[in-house]
Length: 131
Image (cartoon, rainbow, N blue to C red; front, side, top):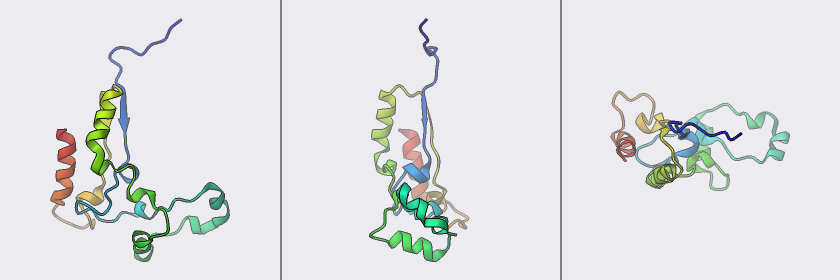
């Protein structure tokens, strides 16, 4: 017995902006709490205790954004911000028919209290959607 997907099966993909987008300091994007997530080896997590789960505050955010020794992978991710055209081509090559894109609201409203969206952020998502 051979099992196959139906011809009209929709192969798709999805991303989470905070893990995938990168370009954290470009296009007018503001900081996000996920930017402070430091890469921690599994064996180190076991010994960290409450240090691993630290409440967010401005001091912690500033430290993470300026730390030159720590590894904060969500700041740059796979760099979809600069490579989205290549990524779309790869998805098409794999046969994807749909794609769910997560939006980084810190790119649209950099401080979180704006009444008008960041035009550079909107332009990025417009360029992606028009591709």
